Length: 126
Image (cartoon, rainbow, N blue to C red; front, side, top):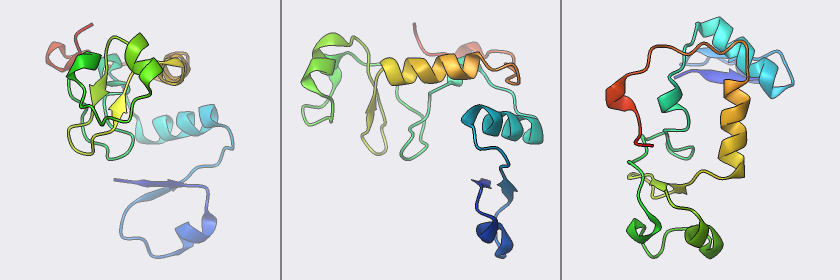
């Protein structure tokens, strides 16, 4: 794990984990800096495949009927979305909506992002 920060005071401390000062103020430039600094490559099938709360891999998609009754999913979303990706660790539930579509478009539209070879075993059913 690496700390990414714009806080110079945090970097001045003796950290026990690696850290990178992120120069830019814009998300696009910040991501470009991190990608270039660490030489990262992405697999399209793994974009948005981890829980944003606990970082665990998300389960395969399930229909609304497969969600727990107490899952924090608005009724309108539950009624209008066909696939959900629940986190098996913390219970957070994800679905493809405007926010996730915008995130995918943002990442796939960046020139600095390199996409590596896809692994068939790791792809979600589509």
